[in-house]
Length: 455
Ligand SMILES: [Zn+2]
Image (cartoon, rainbow, N blue to C red; front, side, top):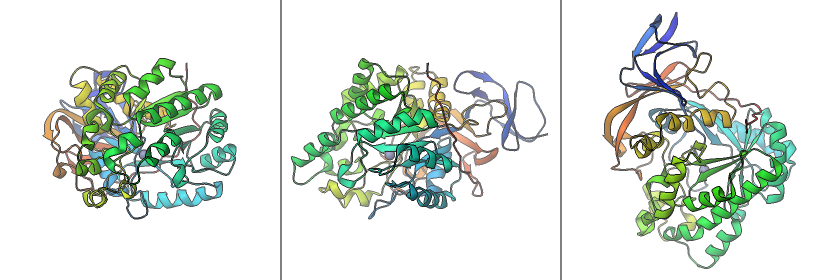
């Protein structure tokens, strides 16, 4: 006897869509069938899309920046995730410089993440590392982590990893089954732009963190990936012109690109007045209208392999008390609860992208990129992480409709079609018909070596 049957829905697994019932037993998908099988509980998904639980590869819950900590802890962040169809997310360990710091960094985040309602995993983060890339790969895998985040900038806060190290690390990635991920911006271009002004204002973010700074660094990572055959992944691609340059040179198979919803919805006009600039301060910043339009073209062409959110909201007051002093302002906005639905409205609803392609970008592609072998598909033997989406529901984003602990959202007032009604993690409902199951718990997703299939 199955534990749960989800019947009457349309399964959309990232490749095909078809009508069938999904059955779950002991936290795993036990059958996908057009017939009605026995189950202790039956959930009626008439008129719904039944999709593999989404995986957000880029969130920052309880990110401690000293004076400020991002508004969503692992509890509220994971609740927002669940209401957004996300059943697993990847957060980050605090940056380490020496390999013996990894254990403590891991334990610290694991402790905080124990309040999560959905599944979680982590990227190791390095900051001007002093130990060998080989040691880094070995040590990271010991903790069930197969991805390492690098910054090509932030030299002033000692977080930058230099090209020589990146080159060596990329060589090791394909030996050890590691993914090197990059926040890619040219450090010197940023420093030069900021040095021109004595005091910094959020209004000038697109000048400080220019699209050229991003374009140069992303292209450099592409070159290093080509030269090393390593597994390279660039987070939060924000600029249509940067991606255009990359495409002109050809994107190597061993480079995968992530993007985020904010770079498709908002443009740099948000930086025109001080208050709005503060509330939309993030890095990379919002780009020009031209960039946004180009991003849409790239998205339609399937250039982005995954979608993350870089979910990192702060409170209105924390942003606004630093108006006029960008250097003290916490960067980031939220998005984990809205990402899929925003993309669905921008692209799928308008017949620009197939639903299957969007689902794949947010589930299967993330699972295979980061070595979650039992996630990202609806098929027997896979983990029973499932999201149920009602395409007919119409709603307007406001603070009452979201679960973030922040007190504003840049998406306020956005009219959306489609809403996740239920989310299942490991065979248990975390959200059922819009109601949270307070007792639901996520588990840590251990990730072993991953080797990308490249053509
Ligand atoms: Zn981030």
